[in-house]
Image (tube, rainbow, N blue to C red; front, side):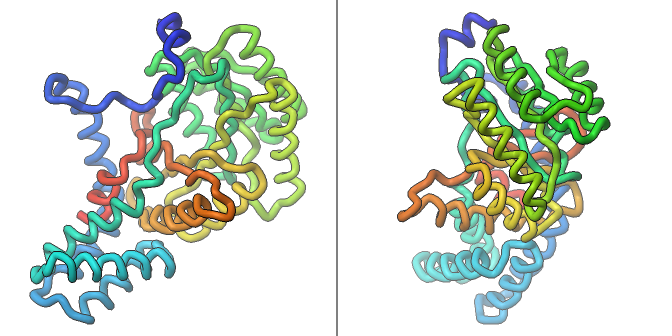
Length: 337
């Protein structure tokens, strides 16, 4: 297994596309999509009621605007979607409100498209992935699920317990290490940057494919703690000048526009390469991904010219299998249907 992983780099860590020849592989994804639809049902129902009338008029668009704002899409993303939708209605000469709903799905899918990109590992060995997030976002749990995802793809993983400020975090990560049967580098009360350095060095020495670094949860307003994150990144680069190869932020899907504020702040401090959106399991509104997509598009255009920050994974529950790769079309359909 490992020789295959070494020789074929980079390796796409996303699941293989479903085909008719492998119906068994479709079942887990279908089950997960059902969970996603259930998790976003509250938002979907609110938006769906907009299209139960018989006319396409200003009242419909006003109701849709309110529903999108209530879904945490934000004013800019809502305005963008409405403008695009009106143009699609004009171009297609749609007269049925339900047809307009389908056009909205298309518009949202196109808007979310830049967020859809697979996590690719194997171009560097080890691929060093630094994971950040505020307390309570589900960061450590997501690391455990990501470890399983990578292991299922054939990668050997080493965990770094760099959240040394909280003993419970080290214990929690240790539990995930045991569940996934992977090694963990940890120090009782040690310096987070030192733990990260040791883990990357150990990953190189032991020939691991991936080193996952769990950092302390913090608010972006805690400037001294954000500086600690920057230090961790610098120290990782001392152990591996090319690393970290991925800097991921875990955000709670329930936090609405605050999630976008977190993305902007952490990106400014660390230069994010990807996102994991968690807790889309009942109360989350989900529209914030539209706001993130609009920000990502602006980030990817001149003068900055940086690549859009993708959403690598979204989570819908606490089980290992409840973390899956993000698909723009699936998410738009789940959100609006």
